[in-house]
Length: 449
Image 1 (cartoon, one colour):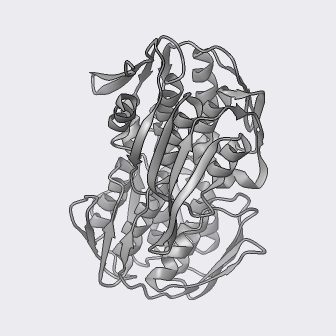
Image 2 (tube, rainbow, N blue to C red):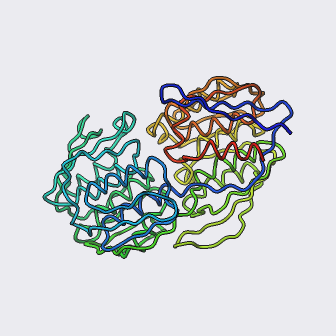
Image 3 (spheres, rainbow, N blue to C red):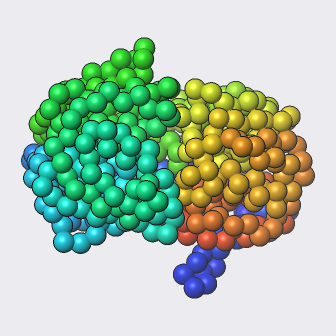
Protein backbone atom coordinates (compact mmCIF):
# COMPACT_ATOMS: atom_id res chain seq x y z
CA UNK A 1 0.00 0.00 0.00
CA UNK A 2 1.29 3.45 -0.89
CA UNK A 3 1.61 5.52 2.30
CA UNK A 4 -0.14 8.82 2.80
CA UNK A 5 2.11 11.73 1.95
CA UNK A 6 2.62 13.90 5.04
CA UNK A 7 5.04 16.75 4.45
CA UNK A 8 5.68 20.21 5.81
CA UNK A 9 6.61 23.52 4.23
CA UNK A 10 7.96 26.45 6.24
CA UNK A 11 7.58 30.04 5.05
CA UNK A 12 8.42 33.05 7.25
CA UNK A 13 8.47 30.83 10.38
CA UNK A 14 4.97 29.52 9.63
CA UNK A 15 4.52 25.84 8.91
CA UNK A 16 2.05 24.37 6.43
CA UNK A 17 1.24 20.70 6.96
CA UNK A 18 0.46 19.04 3.62
CA UNK A 19 -1.51 15.77 3.61
CA UNK A 20 -2.24 13.81 0.42
CA UNK A 21 -4.33 10.71 0.97
CA UNK A 22 -3.19 7.93 -1.40
CA UNK A 23 -5.65 6.83 -4.08
CA UNK A 24 -5.21 3.20 -3.05
CA UNK A 25 -6.50 3.94 0.43
CA UNK A 26 -4.92 4.15 3.84
CA UNK A 27 -4.98 2.31 7.13
CA UNK A 28 -3.17 3.31 10.30
CA UNK A 29 -1.19 0.75 12.27
CA UNK A 30 1.24 0.82 15.18
CA UNK A 31 1.93 1.64 18.79
CA UNK A 32 2.05 5.30 19.82
CA UNK A 33 3.67 6.98 22.77
CA UNK A 34 2.13 10.36 23.50
CA UNK A 35 3.43 13.43 25.35
CA UNK A 36 2.98 13.84 29.08
CA UNK A 37 -0.28 15.26 30.39
CA UNK A 38 -0.25 19.04 30.05
CA UNK A 39 -2.41 19.71 33.12
CA UNK A 40 -0.26 17.52 35.37
CA UNK A 41 2.96 18.97 33.90
CA UNK A 42 1.90 22.53 34.77
CA UNK A 43 0.85 21.61 38.31
CA UNK A 44 3.97 19.58 39.08
CA UNK A 45 6.20 22.51 38.08
CA UNK A 46 4.15 25.03 40.08
CA UNK A 47 3.73 23.00 43.26
CA UNK A 48 7.34 21.85 43.07
CA UNK A 49 8.39 25.51 42.91
CA UNK A 50 6.46 26.54 46.05
CA UNK A 51 7.14 23.35 48.05
CA UNK A 52 10.04 22.81 50.39
CA UNK A 53 12.80 20.54 49.12
CA UNK A 54 13.27 18.85 45.78
CA UNK A 55 10.60 17.64 43.37
CA UNK A 56 11.50 15.27 40.55
CA UNK A 57 9.26 15.03 37.50
CA UNK A 58 9.45 12.15 35.03
CA UNK A 59 7.63 12.35 31.70
CA UNK A 60 7.08 16.12 31.67
CA UNK A 61 5.42 17.51 28.56
CA UNK A 62 8.01 19.49 26.60
CA UNK A 63 5.48 21.72 24.82
CA UNK A 64 5.56 25.50 24.84
CA UNK A 65 2.90 25.86 27.57
CA UNK A 66 4.78 24.00 30.36
CA UNK A 67 7.95 25.80 29.30
CA UNK A 68 6.12 29.06 30.03
CA UNK A 69 5.32 27.84 33.55
CA UNK A 70 8.93 26.79 34.09
CA UNK A 71 10.27 30.17 32.92
CA UNK A 72 7.87 32.10 35.16
CA UNK A 73 8.65 30.14 38.30
CA UNK A 74 12.38 30.28 37.60
CA UNK A 75 12.07 34.08 37.67
CA UNK A 76 10.18 33.73 40.97
CA UNK A 77 13.16 31.99 42.56
CA UNK A 78 12.72 28.26 41.97
CA UNK A 79 15.70 26.32 40.64
CA UNK A 80 14.39 24.27 37.70
CA UNK A 81 16.73 22.01 35.75
CA UNK A 82 16.80 21.77 31.98
CA UNK A 83 13.46 20.39 30.76
CA UNK A 84 13.51 16.84 29.42
CA UNK A 85 11.18 13.87 29.56
CA UNK A 86 13.57 11.63 31.48
CA UNK A 87 13.81 13.74 34.61
CA UNK A 88 13.28 17.35 35.61
CA UNK A 89 14.35 18.55 39.04
CA UNK A 90 12.71 21.48 40.81
CA UNK A 91 14.29 22.91 43.96
CA UNK A 92 11.39 24.64 45.65
CA UNK A 93 11.58 27.85 47.65
CA UNK A 94 8.70 27.06 50.02
CA UNK A 95 5.44 28.97 50.44
CA UNK A 96 5.80 32.70 51.11
CA UNK A 97 9.37 32.67 49.79
CA UNK A 98 8.82 33.61 46.15
CA UNK A 99 10.94 36.58 45.15
CA UNK A 100 9.63 39.77 43.57
CA UNK A 101 11.04 39.56 40.02
CA UNK A 102 12.42 42.57 38.21
CA UNK A 103 11.02 41.23 34.93
CA UNK A 104 7.49 40.80 33.62
CA UNK A 105 6.31 37.20 33.89
CA UNK A 106 5.51 36.10 30.32
CA UNK A 107 2.98 33.24 30.13
CA UNK A 108 3.26 32.89 26.36
CA UNK A 109 0.13 31.22 25.00
CA UNK A 110 -0.68 29.41 28.25
CA UNK A 111 -3.94 30.33 29.95
CA UNK A 112 -3.27 27.62 32.55
CA UNK A 113 0.02 29.26 33.52
CA UNK A 114 -1.56 32.67 33.95
CA UNK A 115 -4.78 31.66 35.71
CA UNK A 116 -3.22 29.22 38.18
CA UNK A 117 -0.23 31.44 38.89
CA UNK A 118 -2.49 34.39 39.71
CA UNK A 119 -3.77 32.54 42.78
CA UNK A 120 -0.22 31.98 44.01
CA UNK A 121 1.01 35.50 43.30
CA UNK A 122 -2.02 37.27 44.79
CA UNK A 123 -1.48 35.49 48.13
CA UNK A 124 2.17 36.57 48.57
CA UNK A 125 2.09 39.78 50.66
CA UNK A 126 4.42 42.72 50.12
CA UNK A 127 5.45 41.64 46.64
CA UNK A 128 4.50 43.16 43.31
CA UNK A 129 4.17 41.13 40.11
CA UNK A 130 3.30 41.83 36.49
CA UNK A 131 2.14 39.14 34.06
CA UNK A 132 1.46 39.12 30.33
CA UNK A 133 1.19 36.72 27.41
CA UNK A 134 1.21 36.53 23.64
CA UNK A 135 -1.26 38.27 21.33
CA UNK A 136 -3.82 35.49 21.85
CA UNK A 137 -3.56 35.21 25.63
CA UNK A 138 -3.94 38.95 26.26
CA UNK A 139 -7.38 38.73 24.64
CA UNK A 140 -8.59 35.82 26.78
CA UNK A 141 -10.80 36.57 29.83
CA UNK A 142 -9.14 36.58 33.25
CA UNK A 143 -12.13 37.95 35.16
CA UNK A 144 -13.30 34.42 35.96
CA UNK A 145 -10.34 34.04 38.34
CA UNK A 146 -9.84 37.70 39.24
CA UNK A 147 -13.39 38.00 40.60
CA UNK A 148 -13.02 35.30 43.30
CA UNK A 149 -9.48 36.44 44.11
CA UNK A 150 -10.82 39.97 44.62
CA UNK A 151 -13.43 38.56 47.00
CA UNK A 152 -10.49 37.11 48.96
CA UNK A 153 -8.91 40.57 49.15
CA UNK A 154 -6.56 40.43 46.18
CA UNK A 155 -5.42 43.60 44.43
CA UNK A 156 -5.16 43.07 40.67
CA UNK A 157 -5.22 45.63 37.87
CA UNK A 158 -5.49 45.08 34.13
CA UNK A 159 -7.03 46.20 30.87
CA UNK A 160 -10.79 46.34 30.31
CA UNK A 161 -11.56 46.90 33.99
CA UNK A 162 -9.06 44.33 35.17
CA UNK A 163 -10.33 41.52 32.96
CA UNK A 164 -7.50 41.29 30.42
CA UNK A 165 -3.71 40.99 30.62
CA UNK A 166 -1.23 42.52 31.01
CA UNK A 167 -2.02 42.36 34.72
CA UNK A 168 -0.39 43.89 37.78
CA UNK A 169 -0.70 42.13 41.15
CA UNK A 170 0.06 43.54 44.59
CA UNK A 171 0.32 40.52 46.85
CA UNK A 172 -1.89 40.57 49.95
CA UNK A 173 -2.77 38.51 53.00
CA UNK A 174 -6.01 37.00 51.73
CA UNK A 175 -9.13 35.84 53.57
CA UNK A 176 -10.84 32.49 52.99
CA UNK A 177 -14.09 32.31 51.03
CA UNK A 178 -16.62 29.75 49.85
CA UNK A 179 -16.84 30.41 46.13
CA UNK A 180 -19.77 29.07 44.11
CA UNK A 181 -18.33 29.01 40.60
CA UNK A 182 -20.85 29.68 37.81
CA UNK A 183 -18.88 27.36 35.52
CA UNK A 184 -17.19 24.00 35.95
CA UNK A 185 -13.56 24.97 35.37
CA UNK A 186 -10.45 23.28 36.67
CA UNK A 187 -8.50 26.49 36.10
CA UNK A 188 -10.88 28.55 38.26
CA UNK A 189 -10.98 25.88 40.97
CA UNK A 190 -7.21 25.45 40.98
CA UNK A 191 -6.51 29.18 41.11
CA UNK A 192 -8.66 29.57 44.23
CA UNK A 193 -7.23 26.47 45.91
CA UNK A 194 -3.70 27.68 45.20
CA UNK A 195 -4.58 31.05 46.74
CA UNK A 196 -5.96 29.20 49.76
CA UNK A 197 -2.62 27.53 50.43
CA UNK A 198 -1.35 30.69 52.16
CA UNK A 199 -4.73 31.83 53.50
CA UNK A 200 -5.57 31.05 57.10
CA UNK A 201 -8.76 29.01 57.38
CA UNK A 202 -10.86 26.98 54.95
CA UNK A 203 -11.16 28.04 51.32
CA UNK A 204 -13.88 26.17 49.42
CA UNK A 205 -14.87 25.98 45.75
CA UNK A 206 -18.23 24.53 44.69
CA UNK A 207 -18.86 23.83 41.00
CA UNK A 208 -22.05 23.16 39.04
CA UNK A 209 -20.44 19.98 37.63
CA UNK A 210 -17.27 18.05 38.25
CA UNK A 211 -14.16 19.42 36.54
CA UNK A 212 -10.80 17.65 36.25
CA UNK A 213 -9.28 16.95 39.66
CA UNK A 214 -5.52 16.91 39.02
CA UNK A 215 -4.96 19.81 41.43
CA UNK A 216 -6.73 18.10 44.32
CA UNK A 217 -4.79 14.87 43.79
CA UNK A 218 -1.45 16.63 43.55
CA UNK A 219 -2.08 19.00 46.45
CA UNK A 220 -2.82 16.00 48.66
CA UNK A 221 0.35 14.28 47.46
CA UNK A 222 2.41 17.39 48.31
CA UNK A 223 0.95 17.49 51.84
CA UNK A 224 -1.90 20.02 51.67
CA UNK A 225 -5.01 19.39 53.76
CA UNK A 226 -7.74 18.82 51.16
CA UNK A 227 -11.32 17.69 51.74
CA UNK A 228 -13.68 16.73 48.93
CA UNK A 229 -17.48 16.53 48.93
CA UNK A 230 -18.46 14.66 45.73
CA UNK A 231 -22.18 15.13 46.38
CA UNK A 232 -21.91 18.92 46.06
CA UNK A 233 -18.83 19.05 43.77
CA UNK A 234 -17.01 20.98 46.50
CA UNK A 235 -13.31 21.04 47.37
CA UNK A 236 -11.79 22.68 50.47
CA UNK A 237 -8.18 23.51 51.28
CA UNK A 238 -7.16 24.42 54.82
CA UNK A 239 -4.37 26.97 55.09
CA UNK A 240 -1.72 27.85 55.74
CA UNK A 241 -0.33 24.70 54.16
CA UNK A 242 3.12 23.19 54.22
CA UNK A 243 4.09 21.54 50.95
CA UNK A 244 6.91 19.04 50.63
CA UNK A 245 8.61 18.17 47.35
CA UNK A 246 7.58 14.89 45.73
CA UNK A 247 8.50 12.45 42.98
CA UNK A 248 5.97 12.92 40.17
CA UNK A 249 5.40 10.60 37.21
CA UNK A 250 3.39 12.29 34.44
CA UNK A 251 1.14 9.92 32.44
CA UNK A 252 0.37 10.43 28.76
CA UNK A 253 -2.15 13.17 27.98
CA UNK A 254 -5.58 11.80 27.01
CA UNK A 255 -6.20 15.07 25.14
CA UNK A 256 -3.27 14.16 22.88
CA UNK A 257 -4.42 10.53 22.65
CA UNK A 258 -7.81 11.78 21.42
CA UNK A 259 -6.41 12.62 17.97
CA UNK A 260 -5.21 9.05 17.41
CA UNK A 261 -8.38 7.55 18.88
CA UNK A 262 -10.42 9.40 16.28
CA UNK A 263 -7.91 8.76 13.48
CA UNK A 264 -8.12 4.98 13.89
CA UNK A 265 -11.89 5.12 14.42
CA UNK A 266 -12.55 6.86 11.08
CA UNK A 267 -9.94 5.34 8.73
CA UNK A 268 -11.07 1.86 7.56
CA UNK A 269 -8.80 -1.05 8.49
CA UNK A 270 -6.89 0.89 11.16
CA UNK A 271 -5.69 -0.37 14.54
CA UNK A 272 -3.60 1.67 16.96
CA UNK A 273 -2.40 1.14 20.51
CA UNK A 274 -1.81 4.35 22.46
CA UNK A 275 0.42 3.56 25.41
CA UNK A 276 0.53 4.92 28.96
CA UNK A 277 -2.54 7.18 28.78
CA UNK A 278 -3.88 8.91 31.89
CA UNK A 279 -7.50 7.79 32.35
CA UNK A 280 -8.44 9.95 35.31
CA UNK A 281 -12.27 9.72 35.44
CA UNK A 282 -12.55 13.51 35.33
CA UNK A 283 -10.83 13.41 31.92
CA UNK A 284 -12.41 10.39 30.21
CA UNK A 285 -15.38 12.18 28.68
CA UNK A 286 -13.71 11.65 25.29
CA UNK A 287 -13.86 7.88 25.78
CA UNK A 288 -17.51 8.04 26.82
CA UNK A 289 -18.42 10.22 23.84
CA UNK A 290 -16.67 7.92 21.38
CA UNK A 291 -18.35 4.91 22.99
CA UNK A 292 -21.71 6.66 22.43
CA UNK A 293 -20.66 6.90 18.79
CA UNK A 294 -19.94 3.12 18.89
CA UNK A 295 -16.17 3.42 18.50
CA UNK A 296 -14.20 0.25 19.22
CA UNK A 297 -11.87 1.19 22.12
CA UNK A 298 -10.47 -1.19 24.74
CA UNK A 299 -8.54 -0.23 27.89
CA UNK A 300 -5.63 -2.62 28.44
CA UNK A 301 -2.93 -2.95 31.12
CA UNK A 302 -4.84 -0.80 33.61
CA UNK A 303 -2.75 0.41 36.54
CA UNK A 304 -2.17 3.33 38.93
CA UNK A 305 0.98 5.46 38.53
CA UNK A 306 1.75 8.14 41.14
CA UNK A 307 -1.90 8.36 42.15
CA UNK A 308 -3.26 8.67 38.60
CA UNK A 309 -5.05 5.81 36.78
CA UNK A 310 -3.29 4.80 33.56
CA UNK A 311 -4.06 2.37 30.72
CA UNK A 312 -3.07 1.47 27.17
CA UNK A 313 -5.86 2.24 24.70
CA UNK A 314 -6.43 -0.08 21.73
CA UNK A 315 -8.67 1.45 19.05
CA UNK A 316 -9.84 -0.24 15.85
CA UNK A 317 -11.87 1.12 12.98
CA UNK A 318 -15.61 0.80 13.41
CA UNK A 319 -18.49 2.58 11.64
CA UNK A 320 -19.56 5.48 13.86
CA UNK A 321 -23.08 6.61 14.76
CA UNK A 322 -24.20 10.15 15.52
CA UNK A 323 -25.08 11.17 19.08
CA UNK A 324 -25.74 14.22 21.25
CA UNK A 325 -22.91 15.49 23.46
CA UNK A 326 -24.05 17.97 26.10
CA UNK A 327 -24.58 18.62 29.79
CA UNK A 328 -22.37 17.34 32.61
CA UNK A 329 -19.97 15.50 30.29
CA UNK A 330 -18.81 18.73 28.61
CA UNK A 331 -16.30 19.86 31.31
CA UNK A 332 -14.68 16.41 31.06
CA UNK A 333 -14.05 16.69 27.31
CA UNK A 334 -13.98 20.42 26.62
CA UNK A 335 -10.52 20.25 25.03
CA UNK A 336 -11.50 17.29 22.85
CA UNK A 337 -14.55 18.84 21.17
CA UNK A 338 -12.59 19.93 18.05
CA UNK A 339 -11.49 16.36 17.36
CA UNK A 340 -14.95 15.02 18.25
CA UNK A 341 -16.30 17.32 15.55
CA UNK A 342 -14.01 15.48 13.12
CA UNK A 343 -15.35 12.10 14.30
CA UNK A 344 -18.90 13.39 13.74
CA UNK A 345 -18.09 14.15 10.08
CA UNK A 346 -17.74 10.40 9.51
CA UNK A 347 -20.62 9.23 11.71
CA UNK A 348 -23.98 8.14 10.35
CA UNK A 349 -26.60 10.77 11.17
CA UNK A 350 -26.42 14.22 12.75
CA UNK A 351 -24.29 14.82 15.84
CA UNK A 352 -25.21 17.74 18.08
CA UNK A 353 -22.71 19.29 20.51
CA UNK A 354 -24.19 21.75 23.03
CA UNK A 355 -23.29 23.58 26.29
CA UNK A 356 -19.79 24.30 24.98
CA UNK A 357 -19.78 28.12 24.75
CA UNK A 358 -16.51 28.00 26.75
CA UNK A 359 -14.80 27.10 23.46
CA UNK A 360 -15.32 30.63 22.17
CA UNK A 361 -12.65 31.99 24.55
CA UNK A 362 -9.87 29.43 24.09
CA UNK A 363 -6.74 30.03 22.00
CA UNK A 364 -9.22 30.75 19.23
CA UNK A 365 -13.00 30.73 18.97
CA UNK A 366 -12.93 26.98 18.46
CA UNK A 367 -16.60 26.69 17.52
CA UNK A 368 -16.18 29.23 14.73
CA UNK A 369 -12.80 27.82 13.71
CA UNK A 370 -13.94 24.22 13.40
CA UNK A 371 -17.22 25.13 11.67
CA UNK A 372 -15.64 27.34 9.01
CA UNK A 373 -12.61 25.12 8.34
CA UNK A 374 -14.52 21.83 8.19
CA UNK A 375 -16.96 23.48 5.79
CA UNK A 376 -13.98 24.20 3.50
CA UNK A 377 -13.44 20.42 3.33
CA UNK A 378 -17.06 19.94 2.30
CA UNK A 379 -18.53 19.03 5.68
CA UNK A 380 -22.10 19.95 6.63
CA UNK A 381 -21.55 21.87 9.86
CA UNK A 382 -23.84 24.40 11.50
CA UNK A 383 -22.38 26.69 14.15
CA UNK A 384 -24.63 27.00 17.22
CA UNK A 385 -24.31 29.66 19.95
CA UNK A 386 -22.90 27.02 22.31
CA UNK A 387 -21.87 24.20 20.02
CA UNK A 388 -21.98 22.55 16.62
CA UNK A 389 -24.39 20.46 14.55
CA UNK A 390 -22.60 18.10 12.17
CA UNK A 391 -24.19 15.80 9.60
CA UNK A 392 -21.96 12.86 8.75
CA UNK A 393 -21.59 10.78 5.64
CA UNK A 394 -20.93 13.69 3.27
CA UNK A 395 -18.25 13.25 0.60
CA UNK A 396 -15.26 15.39 1.56
CA UNK A 397 -12.50 16.92 -0.52
CA UNK A 398 -9.25 18.55 0.44
CA UNK A 399 -8.39 22.23 0.39
CA UNK A 400 -6.61 25.03 2.19
CA UNK A 401 -7.54 25.33 5.87
CA UNK A 402 -6.35 27.58 8.70
CA UNK A 403 -5.52 26.67 12.29
CA UNK A 404 -5.88 30.24 13.64
CA UNK A 405 -2.69 29.51 15.58
CA UNK A 406 -4.67 27.06 17.77
CA UNK A 407 -2.91 23.76 18.46
CA UNK A 408 -6.08 21.69 18.86
CA UNK A 409 -7.62 23.09 15.69
CA UNK A 410 -4.42 22.37 13.73
CA UNK A 411 -4.21 18.75 14.86
CA UNK A 412 -7.94 18.12 14.41
CA UNK A 413 -7.78 19.35 10.81
CA UNK A 414 -4.79 17.07 10.18
CA UNK A 415 -6.76 14.03 11.33
CA UNK A 416 -9.72 15.06 9.16
CA UNK A 417 -7.39 15.29 6.16
CA UNK A 418 -6.52 11.59 6.46
CA UNK A 419 -10.02 10.68 5.30
CA UNK A 420 -10.70 13.17 2.49
CA UNK A 421 -9.79 13.11 -1.19
CA UNK A 422 -7.20 15.38 -2.80
CA UNK A 423 -4.59 17.41 -0.92
CA UNK A 424 -5.19 19.32 2.29
CA UNK A 425 -2.91 22.20 3.30
CA UNK A 426 -3.11 23.14 7.00
CA UNK A 427 -1.65 26.58 7.58
CA UNK A 428 -0.02 27.66 10.87
CA UNK A 429 0.44 23.99 11.73
CA UNK A 430 3.40 24.90 13.94
CA UNK A 431 0.80 25.66 16.63
CA UNK A 432 0.71 21.92 17.39
CA UNK A 433 4.01 22.28 19.28
CA UNK A 434 2.20 24.13 22.06
CA UNK A 435 0.96 20.82 23.44
CA UNK A 436 2.36 18.14 21.10
CA UNK A 437 5.87 18.85 19.79
CA UNK A 438 6.16 15.52 17.92
CA UNK A 439 2.67 15.46 16.39
CA UNK A 440 3.78 15.60 12.76
CA UNK A 441 6.48 12.95 13.26
CA UNK A 442 3.94 10.61 14.89
CA UNK A 443 1.47 11.23 12.07
CA UNK A 444 4.14 10.32 9.53
CA UNK A 445 5.03 7.21 11.53
CA UNK A 446 1.54 5.71 11.59
CA UNK A 447 0.90 6.57 7.96
CA UNK A 448 4.00 4.61 6.96
CA UNK A 449 3.25 1.60 9.19
